[in-house]
Length: 160
Image (tube, helix red, strand yellow):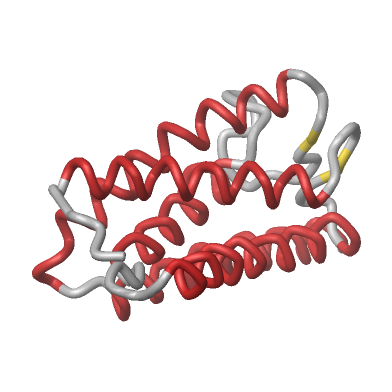
């Protein structure tokens, strides 16, 4: 019975994330979204494998590629990169430092709230030698690295 709950959550994550991409990625910015997605994908692949292989986090219930990798394909390879694409596309480039910092905090916090829920109430993720603040820090850092790459790749100049 419990496995069905995890499967529903994981499938819902795919549906909701796909809808978010269709709704919030303008057709004229698909290229930008794709580059952000792939860059975040590379970063989360590295961090995700490192954290799982070191035994800091485990994903007891996974829907896809259970024997290929110990990481969560859904979250590490689709949800986080997709959310990062949205993050970069709608980044408040012309706003002040405080708004930009708040933008990072809000995006990272939304992910962390869902992760904490998953840790507490599901078997989708289990913290072994990890805590929410490590997730917060690494997600913030990967967003930051992704943003730097995005600005460089698309030659965006900071105005603040």
